[in-house]
Every structure is written in C-alpha cells, then in structure tokens.
Image (tube, rainbow, N blue to C red; front, top):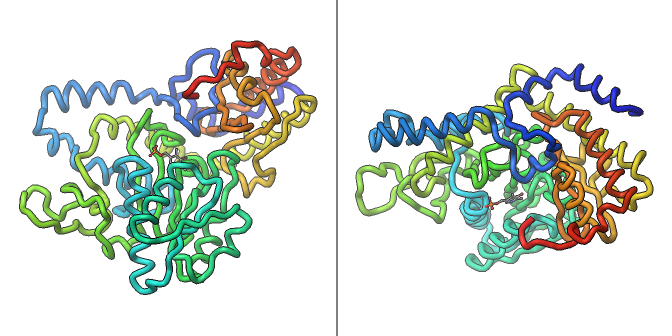
Length: 418
Ligand SMILES: *Cc1c(COP(=O)(O)O)cnc(C)c1O
C-alpha cells in the first residue's frame, strides 16, 4: 500500500464497514486495544439505565422472573456459544475467567485421573497469561499434581502418558501466536489427556470451533473482544460428555438442581448449569449482552469468518507498513507472520524504549499497550477498526520515532498500572 487514499479505498469497499456505527468511539482516538478492553457499544448506556431504573427501580425483586434475570447466564451463554462453535445449552456466563478456570481445571484433572490415577501433570505454556498459571499452580498443589511448563513448539513432545490436562490459551496474550486447537486437542487425547482452552483472546476475534476440535473444556473473557465493559463476567463451556461427570468445586446455590427449595445437601444441576456458583451480576450481564450482540450483528454479513478475513487484512497491513515505513525504528515483529498462526493482534518488540514509545503514541491518540519487558502490542478489532486507522497509526509511529518524541521525560515515567 502506497498512500492514505489506498487505505480509504479499502474502507469504502469493506462490506463490514457499517458495523463500526454500533460503537461510541471518541474523536481523535485510534483504538488498538480492544484485545484488553473492548469499546462501548451505543446500546449499552440505555440498556443499563433501563435495567437500573425500570427492572430494578420499579420491578424490584419481581424482575428475577418478569425481566428474565434468572435466565441471563444461559441466554447470553447461548449467544456466545454461536461465536465459539458450542451448542445451545452448553455454555454459561459467570464469574471471572480466573474463577471459571479454577472450576474447569479442577474438573478436568479429576476426570482425567479418575481412570488413570498415575497421571499427575498439568501441562501448559511458559508464556501463558500469568493468572492461568497461578490458578494451575493452586489446583496442582491442591490435588497433588505437577504443573509443567513448556515453550509452544515443545508441547507435542511433552504430551506424554503422565499428562492429565493440557491447559492452553488459544491466542497468546503477548505475541498473538495462535495454537492449532484441533491438532493439539487430538495429540492430548492420544496421550489420554483432556484439553482445556482459554479463549480470552479468541472469542469474538477469530473463528473457534470447540465442537469440531473435540475440545473438552473452555473459558473466556467478556470484556475484551466481546465488548462487555470493564470487569464484565466471563464464560465457561464444558463438553456435554463431561458436564455431569464432576461436581465443580465452587458448589454454590445457583449451580444447585433446585436452588429455591432451600434444602441442605447439594445436588448439582443438570448439564452446564452446575458450573454456576452464586447470584449473577445483573447490571454487568446486561452490558455484556449488548457487547455480544455487536458481534452477532455481523452474522448476516458472514459472521466470524468475514470478521477473520478483515482481521487478517488489518494485521497484515499493519505489519507491512511497519516494515516499509519504520525500518529505521529498531522494531522486530514479534507476532507470527503467517496468517494462520496469528490472532487479531500484532506485537512489535524493541530493545529499550518500548514503554515510552507506547506512551508517546497514546499522547497522539493511538492507544495500544505495553507488555513487559519489551513488547508494543496493537489489537485490531474488525468490528470497528478501519484500514485508514492502520495507515494513520503507522504514520504516528513514524513521527514518534523520527523526531525522537518518545525520549521526552514524561513518556519515560512508568506508572504502576498501564
Ligand atoms: C484477560 C485474560 C484473563 C483475565 O482473567 P480475569 O479473571 O478476568 O482477570 C485470563 N486469562 C487470559 C489468557 C487473559 O488474556
């Protein structure tokens, strides 16, 4: 691509372009961080106000039934299921990703080891998101397992008979590397292990086919590509063949077969409902549903497959433009260059200055993020990112580097939270 006009022409020809109107995007901002916190859908504020003023304010406790509050975990779960290749009634919205991971990892190790007690290993990737590894460490301690970490390319060799559970994040949060879910699940099964997938950077970003891949368990995040808002509840999926094989460890009343009988003695609900724990956060759920609906709005336009085509075009263009226009900047493209191996983000690495360069870009309205120690991370959400945004973002990066803007002292003060 040679000129800004070329980018504008791609936007003019983009059949998904109308989807951008679903969002509130502040003027002067190029938002390349939807992989960390998705943007605000236009419908969310009014919907949340309706839930608060009418359903809560007027309906009061009646709204658990009359406004369908009790159904929210399953109703939104069914919508997310359409995005990740799961069946209706197989996926629920609940708690946080970390908490859901605790539930399913506990279940996975118990189920895998029920028939093969000698299996002791939970296998994961060294560069997995820290909370996933912390939870795995805790589950391993609790059940006398061992957490074994490998680099991504070592995983097939490490899948030996000792492995009970292969627990991976489908798209790596830092590099954007995407695993072959079907292949690794198959290799896990061949070793007699179960496969658990974290879809935090996949759901709403890339097509996922949990059923087709024969995956065993999955969790995912509501506030990233699903645009559910800060701290939105997460989701959990268990393949129906396992759903009723185990009491998940957080046996709360919402996962009980008859929560309103108020009887002592736990009886787990049928199917995935037993993976609920406590009362659903209704206001947050309402916001999440608005976010999920922005993705379902793409279904008549080709759905996740069409979004994926655009996402690949966006990430490929960004990588090309960085190589063509920022050759002097000392950047290495840390994400896989092969489309099939990459999620919806591009990461650059640079020895020194990565944090300050991200800060200088943010000051110019280009919002990406920094991931320690040396990564500049840019997420591309095909629902609302335009080709001209990619062109302009690289233009800002060129400016930041050419004028040494990033070396200004204010960009080099590291804050605790980024
Ligand atoms: C974002 C993310 C999480 C977030 O977990 P929370 O419980 O919502 O804080 C977990 N795992 C991965 C891989 C993530 O990318």
